[in-house]
Image 1 (cartoon, rainbow, N blue to C red):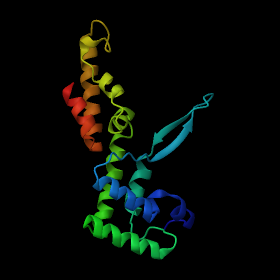
Image 2 (image 1 turned 90 degrees about the horizontal axis):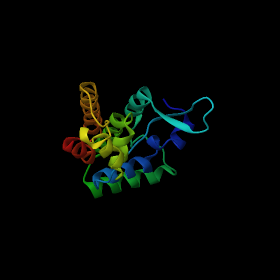
Image 3 (image 1 turned 45 degrees about the horizontal axis):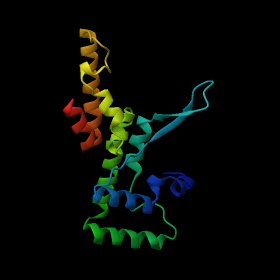
Image 4 (image 1 turned 90 degrees about the vertical axis):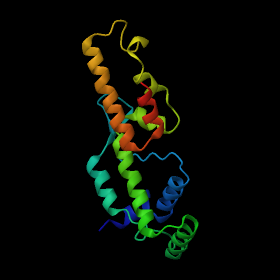
Length: 175
């Protein structure tokens, strides 16, 4: 059971938001969901995003377009019927698709360069995947630097693959 104010304010519990998420995914649009908290370091005015693993898992079990809030409730029934007609899917399939997006977004939450690449900002990820002789890794990379690069590429590939980002996977594979 969720608090009533959560149903009204959290996008993961609003029928319209879940159906828009499904529509974006059905049209193969880039989707990035950030689930977490913001934190301020002592003496720093800037907020920093902190992914929240437990929150992501909890949301996945609670998200259900059939139980989601809508104002008025009759709108929800019509919205769901329209989505079922337009995309030829059931409510269960809509839930599977939106929950899958949540799981995939969690996979890249700790690697902002992968998330950015999914949105078309590929420069940082390309820089991280730069060849050893590019200067990114120093002028004369040692064996330790080579191991460090391999470990980074492995971490980037895991994040890219788990996020479902074909853009990010392609960039890492080209490295």
